[in-house]
Image (cartoon, rainbow over all chains, first blue to last red; front, side, top):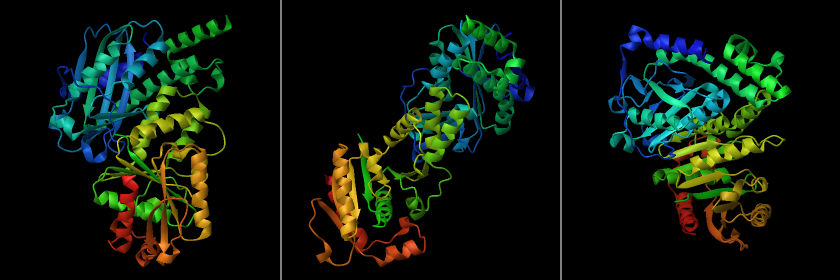
Length: 236
Length: 245
């Protein structure tokens, strides 16, 4: 069973609800947008997604992905050229499929791939502890036809650079604050599992009795297996 | 192009914050893209320009250190978090942005936190063509290496011997710290031209005692609305001297 099996099923169930599914559209990838680490200031902003005041969510999980044979880019809500108001709620959900030898290494590599995805005219700010993503697109980039399909494609490219990745599903929710809020529940479970994975790999002594992730490790079989493996390795 | 970074320094009470606020007002009128950094723990610049920050850089630092003490945080997560939190702190008004530094950091070495935080601020600062730092009173800022990237050190003093002595000390300290910045003196609250004395520092300007400043301070009025007059005309002349060096 995969590390994120339970919350991943919950995410999939939300996306499969007719009211959600019917609004999800598969969009073709757009490649070739220049990469640059830009900071977009307020007066240059054309579109703002995931401002802390508007609702924001980012999560990433991975599995063997037997049902995801190829990349998929989905969008619920308007794309950049369809956005009238300046600020909208935003969720970015990334599912990565592949075979990975080490879960911890995979987690770090996938996170870094996302963090390193920087596009010209788009300022992406992320706050892992709050699972927030805050994007500001400058007017010039909008005028030049920037689309969320460019962001999705760039994220896909970055994630494919990680060893073992076979396919990537990028789902973006724009302007649906209640849906962003609903997704935040399974996303919080994904974050707790990721947090436990990081902690058990970064701390030499596993003091499970006093650990804030104790309940997560007890509940997720795959985490239990990793913890047992690490304890064996460290006592060897 | 690298931004012009102007640090406004001097003894407490000589009018650094008023000068910083009036410079901000002029930069706004000129549609310059400027970052205003309130490095005085008293937060006077925020009050003078009616910015109302909810948190400061030092609040973020304290919160992060607490989190680090409670449980391990991945270093990369920390770096991206600072980029986010610095942007969240930023108050923007047209082309101007305001960043509050807050109370000085407490004892203890959190070098990695400080380094990542500085990198985030530097990344943000690079987006502006002018940065104005309303520095803490005295020479503390120099001691804390805040001035390492400053291009212009604006030493503000009234005409008192004490005020002038502090400006000389700040310049000496900056020189000793190898701060490679142009520095000059701006005399404030000059009541009589005969009060302008020669010092070792180049004189960038002299501002007259001004009743409107006193009224704005007393009534907590927004310095962005400060009317043009002799004071602002003299400051404009000083700014030409400063930015032409």
